[in-house]
Image (cartoon, rainbow, N blue to C red; front, top):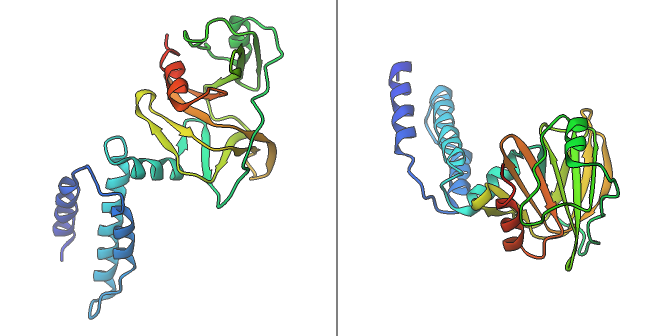
Amino acid sequence: MTDDRLTEELRALGRSVAPPVAPDLATAVLERIAEQPVRRTAVDLLRSKWRALLALLAILLAGAVVAPPVRAAVAEWLNIGGVEARPVPSGPTSAPGPPAVTGRMSVEEAGRQAGLIPIVPKRLGTPTGVEASGGKVAMSWETADGVVRLEQFADRLSPYYVKKYYDSLEPVPAVNGYWFSTPHELVLEDRYGQERFERVAGPTLVWVYEGLTFRLEGAVSKERAAEIAASATR
């Protein structure tokens, strides 16, 4: 098979990928890669594996329109804005409420110090605490249901956030985000791979809007968190 013919076949393969996709399709593709065909040359085998790998890549890159289980897999492999989601086999069973922000900066002052223009969710109004450090703005509110904490930053922090979760991520399409439904470890990892345990976090919504990454913790439900996130607009 010539290179031109192979290129045409790969293009045709890409055009043939059409969502929605069955949740177990990624598994099926990986199993296909693992098969060892008989009576084929090494070149044929390599080409076959490349075709399967490209098909899997095309499926995962269509994550915005495919079934939620596949979208969750994309989040596992990639970063959600400036937050890395890392699956682990087990995790904490409970978590304290999020810590209140004790700083009393104005939102504008915090933005200048962090180098960004913060957004205050309209659903929550004026925060009771605001502070900034290391390119991040944190704010919190005292509500009838407890403390609600919001952090936002423009770039991947150094060290950056890693959320070690052990349950599936739940997509929140309304804000292009993901809901971490169970308690999980929140750690900071530097560029050398050294981790520092920060705390155990409760259910959290992470989303990206206009180049900012948001972490919202303390909302009583995924629905309430989505409402708050949807109101965080300019």
